[in-house]
Length: 271
Ligand code: HPA
Image (cartoon, rainbow, N blue to C red):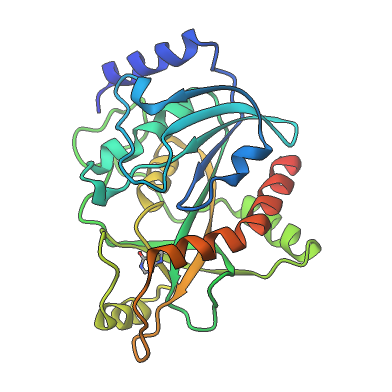
């Protein structure tokens, strides 16, 4: 993605008056209900936005939602892009650059993930404290546009510590069981083999999924404070692996969604 494309997309959205967002939100699989809490001012379908990839996954709607949530101006991505859909890492993360240019100062990300740490159970939440990028592509590969961020960005604290601290505090006050752990991003679309779950555990992952890491890398590249929460939808026990049904993943995501929504709203209030 080049600067011309970025400017074209930005002008399109700014011409619709959508340039005063404070908080960006990326909603993961089965986690779209937060949208119902937003007093929506405007929505724009991805298909209508120049240079935006189009969402291809059924359980993901594809649109940007602008409005107010917990007293802040937010822009939410209802539907995100995944590597397994065939997009490049640069395409996947183009919307993050756009949201940043629209003025957001915080990026909140959610996803559905499998629990590799067997102390974590399905239906529970995990605050991502760090990640392992196992995707075969990096969104920053290629010519660096110095205006967008440094060639070799530091990523020693990929998830903003203050946001993490706030979420931990909110979870405690709200009686929400919020685990903390390392998220590994794999290309998908197949789930993992037992040997792969063993490997993920050995290398230090607590959860595994197919998203989030490219967006977080770009958020760090542009200097955007971000945080991410995984909804754990299945338990990845290599010794006792039950076949995963996608409807069950979606059902688990739906079960945990109200807690995630509460956390997100309180976090936004506190910003
Ligand atoms: N792997 C395993 N389980 C999952 C995943 C994944 O990528 N996403 C949600 N549950």
